[in-house]
Length: 426
Image (cartoon, rainbow, N blue to C red; front, side, top):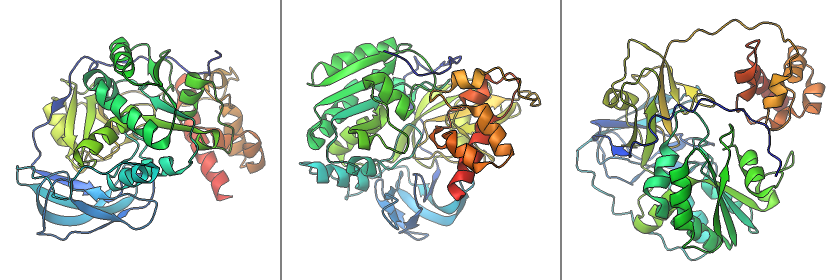
């Protein structure tokens, strides 16, 4: 089958063979009221309130949010502003842990008998895309009542990241259990799991687990970035092209991350909402990289300390992977978010000054969607919105491949992002 364009990156996955370890319980957590694509939640607690694990502490203000839950048991000490990596300022609830991790009485396994039950469970559990996207899972389920195929993303093609790989190696039955549950309730007959061939153990163990369920297969994929992007994953696993202006749901396809499927299976068994994350901690400034299971809202310095980070040499701190992650401005204030899958601390690097485009075409050969980043760059400089639309700028998935390969060191991905914003405002 024809493959979409992409690039080969140095993977640097030093934590791929390191089992997930539980971080010692933090003394406190700070839980922002926005950890999903949508609108902030409204705090439902006050300072001095006692809360338990899984208790709702943030209530959705509209349908563009899901509840936010306490990740530790203890006392609410403050409600203050918090600045997210994207610059948004939202309320944040600080909880001092009592060390007991008492689970809320409201945490009970849900009754799941049909599509409506699954949609409600995804909403009440606070489920969001676990690959870093933060999309509301319940909205994906509600987008169509005629899904014909489930595509499950196990690619994890960004350098450093191994949280999904460890999930598939350590708990493949949870992933398959979640896939089977979703298929049953949404009446989907076929599921395909895309896993890159640089994860042979994950392919083997997931294939063995999938054999126990009808209609689930594992599709080995070449280690090519951005293999995990939704449209790329869909095309490479089932050959379907999602047209411009359409969604995967319009094509009868539901696409989810392996972590999302595993979480929903565990929630169906325990009723405990999304209150913890497995985070890959890595980068050139980290002495002992690891995969850590942590409560949502844990200070990032707790993870960096656990992994022997050299703060004096740390020049860059990222929430997520190096290609699509967001910079963290202040390590002392930052916490682990619900959708976060990685924390990267890197030493200083030299960034050459951009020079004029040399018309080499490297950016076009790298783009998975066959866009023309250099022409988009030119049109944006001229503020030519008509040409930007003709160049299908809105299709860009912000993977950063164009910037990575540009020999002139032009910030093409950043320019395309600005061009998309200009079109949206037109």
